[in-house]
Length: 133
Picture 1: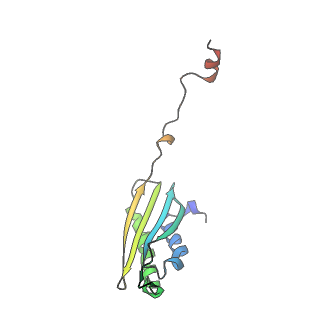
Picture 2: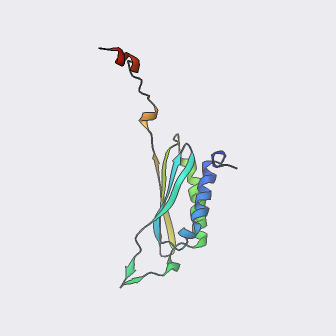
């Protein structure tokens, strides 16, 4: 099955499956998914700065658990139902874990390219310009 034939919900689910190991034990960050013609193009995770106390980096076990990553994946796929009337843009899932509890917010950004709507057609053809004295 090619990507264009998959629903966007399913594509987002696949993205989160790919990112599962990267999200596991993460404390905070943003999952970014770029969409063009309802197809996922680029995606990735922007990790928030890793905090340290007294010069020591926190233990990796403090971040998201496997169950929390699974719940995050399901929430992300379900959130696609909120997307309305746009085919190009970016979705950002901002997440954090504090005291073992995770939270996330979703930002949908639609992108439009005005250049694709209007094509410039010169009033005079190239030949007419060459023929003028």
